[in-house]
Image (tube, rainbow, N blue to C red; front, side, top):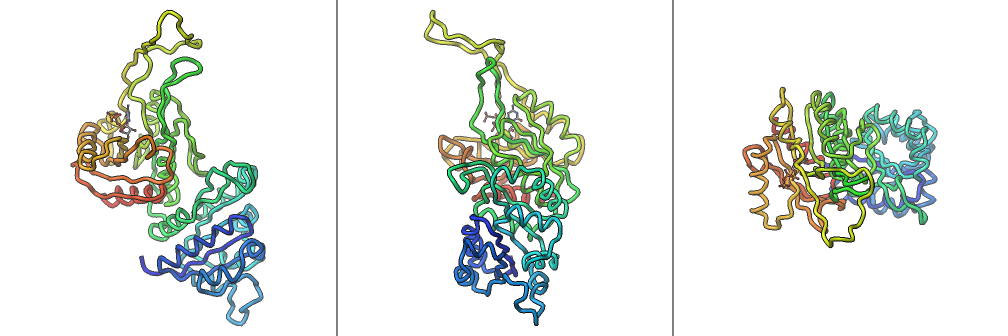
Length: 399
Ligand code: CTP
């Protein structure tokens, strides 16, 4: 990517200290970075730090550089604007087009892609005012990265933690590369893991967190697609702006997929689906047996949603499957993937290794993507969001 003129807007929240890493990563990637900090941001991070790391003067005061009309010039010159952290207050100001400070003017004067990384306490993020403001921003094509669920400022944790700097940078650069290349497309993503009830309190399930599928939904949304996410027991919050359908079991997932796939241009089956379900579900808690030290469960096969979907597709639709494999040898892994895609009949298969410590719960992923001929079309390694963008690049480039 050619060097970009990037404005990094920093507003006044504690996550401002992480914005220094955002600036650093962009500078090291060869971009010309101009920091626009609100006066409150400078209560959290020192101006010399930002000037040293960005290698440019920092703009804060609306009445500096008046002779060169700097309050509009900075925005006009930008190829990309990243606001990190974006506090609830700054989000509200952007949503209502306020120009009371340098950052507001810069944003209003720019036609560049804008990427914002919200950071605030969970209650503030979930407040209807913030939810409405975020929807306004998204409807105007502004990209939202995060926030994540995790440790907040104090000892509390929840949704509202700013995304990691490398994710913000990846999403920001992807926004420039692809600004709205999926506008007008409909994307259906399944994520999470199905659970098959044994009785009212127990289930057979798997360790899928839903993070990779949610990242695909996020990436597609940022690229302008209309996204439906079918979530099976998600452990991560779905992005604001997707249509969420929650399911529990494989049969529920199948019903939802069949209904939603009809209108989708792309279906990404990232969910980890239980291949079997208990043949009987007890209506009350199964009691411990005193007469035997073993308990046998009878399971029956679940339908293969992906295979059925691929064989019944009626129009020019791209179908992507995921393969979760514990195989450690790379060439055997590829062979397993090749056998799986020919069995499933989908267009692409994203092969990822899972295990006791890799895959499901991690924030990072390493995948190989193959096409229906079994040829390797690409690979990706990095945050789940960057992997998601790469998958979208690969599957749409092939069309
Ligand atoms: N899948 C599905 N329906 C199932 C099982 C899997 O639609 N009953 C989909 C998953 O969503 C995924 C792909 O098929 O996109 C591969 O899932 P995976 O669990 O890796 O493969 P399986 O077919 O279950 O094969 P195996 O367990 O033998 O590896």
